[in-house]
Image 1: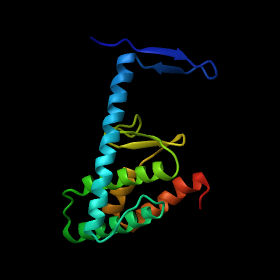
Image 2 (image 1 turned 180 degrees about the vertical axis):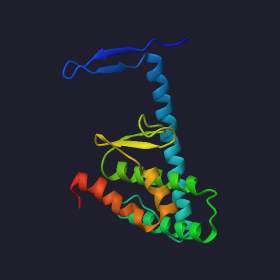
Image 3 (image 1 turned 120 degrees about the vertical axis):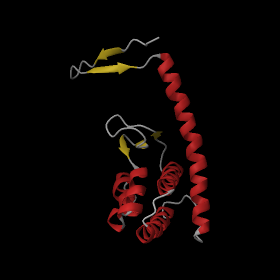
Length: 165
């Protein structure tokens, strides 16, 4: 059975705003819980990876700088071997860690698997009214190198917004 799409008109600009049905919202909430559980598991895996490199992550703001160093080591491995197996998974683990760090130190947001503009499996994080993409940050750092420094992006996008830098 196909759900009928419902919309309301935004009287300020004439655009229509889509309303979710109760079933759609319930499914979305279940997805949110699944992502929250996934975020917990993945961030713990990021901690384990860090320990394998002799580093301890503590969810402090400065620990994101340690994440940058770890991603740098993964980039060196990738450049040396040209083997990308497992690296997207590691990028997602460190993205989850970065998100948990934001939530523990600043405020919570909402992690979504898919983004309406950037597509499926982009794992956007809506925080403080904006979409940020820690998964993409980590992927780009691993595959593209130091010009995609995660610590710099974190400072520019997250910390500048909170005026902590």
